[in-house]
Length: 475
Image (cartoon, rainbow, N blue to C red; front, side, top):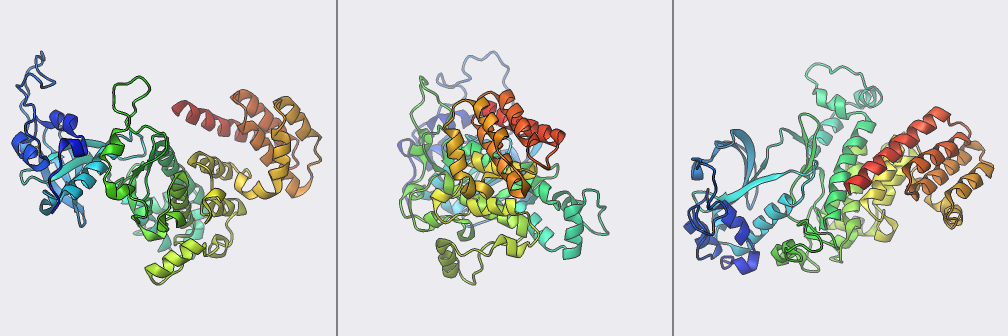
């Protein structure tokens, strides 16, 4: 049994002080090795001297159990009723038998803290943390009513092939008897791609904050009853790069990286393999250093599963699965879904490349290609090889007008010419800070490409760069 945690080990003094009004200070101090905590009447308490009238809260009886949502080796997740705020939440609780296990406490506390610091519409929010009457650590979060992405994929896979074809191509299908209407909503491939885009947005945000998820899989993505997408279970997340999960900028008084000090050593140890094997990147399995591209590999597996309703690797045992992943033995997506456009197949293959250097450099690049596919344009992944020399030639020209004129002078004929022109226009337009100029250049470039109408070009250009500008403003 590990020794109880101390403030020096987990750096939770400020958090516990804020919780002192609603939890037993002596009990909490005993579990975490703290001498005392400021009480509501103490001079050090943040509410000391407040002009507000005292409010009587429920204390230890605040959360009333409603239902069990899930259970695992470290504890369980339950639906609870918050008597103070009069709402239903999800409460994740550490098992009482682990209440004195320092390693388990640190792991549980890490998950609560890192999730709470990732404030994004597609990441489940954490509301509260404390100890229950039995001394077990818990935290509360948003209760998501709906289903996991794993359940949705399983339900879609169970549809007869003929019915799935109807759902995939028709946006106005009516549900048959005893058929879930949600299947019709997510049956069309474009709708599943939109869902994937929201997952990518959550991971891109986490990467900017310096956090890798490391356990991306359909079971860790929830789809709410109103279509909201939430990425869950950040317990294996790992700090990475120069992002600041605590949001402290230059000149702030906060310590340099509080979450890195709080993170359990087991999660940072080189060679430690944690996660779900089917979604692990080859370098994660080999215990090598990780970066954003490890999560991108998992996103590629997830996208493959969203399109094919099955995993990309065939194996009858975990060792065989690990071998196939590390050697890059993947069942071709085009073989599983014969009529799938080659553009989206290229995106999946690039995201799942065995060599990290061959993958997308970041989630934003993956997002751009998925959105290009949704707009009916050619993604970078599909034309990367044949356009490398051309792009290098034009990227060396700093003047966007010159680049546009060069494109107009090209003889773009036939299907390959269409793809070439679109890809070149997108490549140039991405490099311009002026969104309006980029939009106009892209539109003009598409117009001179045979087979693409002016209005379609304008619509595609406007939508694409409006999204890029919105992401730039959010970043």
